[in-house]
Length: 341
Image (cartoon, rainbow, N blue to C red; front, side, top):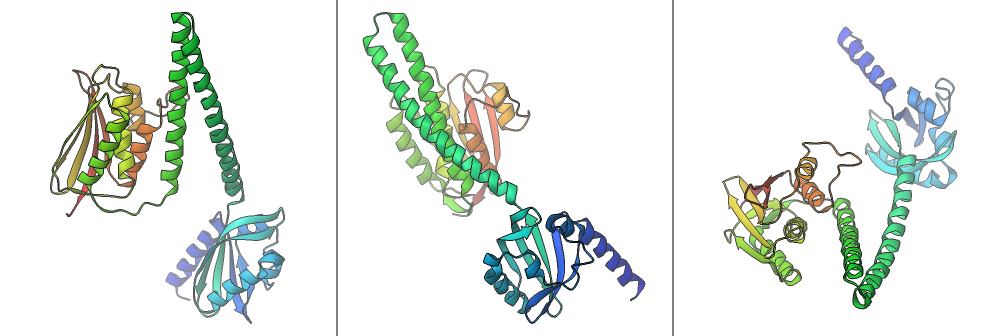
């Protein structure tokens, strides 16, 4: 082995040993993986001494009985020179744990098996899923009771002070209901894989505007944009736009709330703006959502609508800008890549 090859082998050995994931090098004998070498992480995770496992059958050491058939399929693929990737169970000194397994073949009947432990991550996700389902169910039912009781108090109250208190309860409960709806939308949006494509902007805008006009009949919603304009986006573009219009109207405390949707374009970029005549988005909320300031327990924004807009915009590799106008109102601006018509 020449000096260059020796240096290369030394660098590879150092990488092999320093990886946090458990790695085992093996050779296939009669389609069974026989251990050639392991790194330190393999020893730590599976509890075997690195010297005593050399020459042992890998599947007998770490593959549970219920997973042997699946492991044999992986081994046949390795023998055919094909890679493997799967979520698997493997036996460790702490019991069966869950791993992301990647099998990488090399040379003739040799390969590397890489194991990334995801047991705690999977358990945490399962616990969070249960927690979310319980909270959503209980919150929905309890809010319905609160709203019903608030209506009853408003109808039967004998003093204006009691009616005002009941109206405040109802307003707060409606706010929590909106937050629950936003959280459900966020969960759906973040759970979907984005498939970006060319999307005609004008039909999406018109559909959102029609829906919002039905919901907010006291508001004036106008559109100023060319008919033929396409952006790089996906089927969540309507969610982004709907949240912008909702935010412009629901937080608007003037007697004639207005929301104007305007779109302009250059050769490469489409700028989509929603302009309102409300009180303006507070500076701390603008700065948190746009990343100018960090989230803290006290400063995290008042809802999920703008966060949802931010996350979808990031998915599109776009840019979010929020401006409060001196004469009153806000401009929320989304810059997206322009697509060919």
